[in-house]
Amino acid sequence: MSAQRLSEPAVEPVSLDEFRDWLRVEPGSEETILAHLLVAARLALEGHTRRGFVSQDWRFTYACSLSGGLMRLPLGPLRAVVALRVYDAAGAATSLAPAAYELVRDDQRPAIRLLDLDARARAARVELDVTIGYGPAASDVPAPLRQAILMLATNWHARRGDHSETGLTLPRAITTLVAPWRRARLA
Image 1 (cartoon, rainbow, N blue to C red):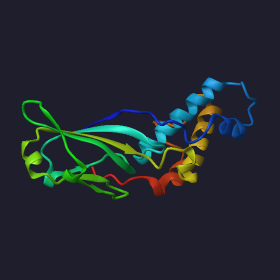
Image 2: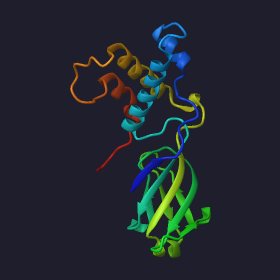
Image 3: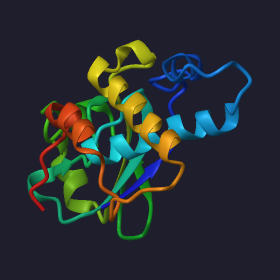
Image 4: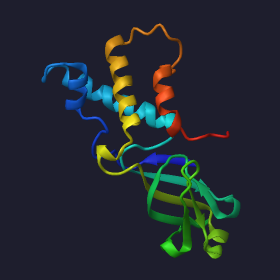
């Protein structure tokens, strides 16, 4: 299975103005650095929790040894299926209608089950385009996740690369804050 982000979130969960207020920094000061810290903090926490925070589109491509036609998504929460295409051995694509699959809206392990047995039998590869995230607005993101972004970006801003910590671990206060949203991983 491979994953490709098709679209970035339209907004960040924490705005530049919120971050400046949090840091008590004057407007116009370090705008680019602060904006990059917010994006980096969001990406780090999305990776840590295996969740998209603000709605974003992804494409997941599966080699077809699908157990029972089930395609587990590596990210959540699942908002919508945008498109599902089945490719045969010759590379010809067939788009499937929503009746040919079902959504398994499990918070920990969202999945799509391919119901069309004919499509399942001829599939050499499946491409699945989905929208993940809590919603299109920053306010849709749970407050503790937004707070964790602020805390992590603040940590990076204060240290400016002068970390005594080894590795790429997140500070304990932040991992504790996001723990309820971290998706379990078995492998």
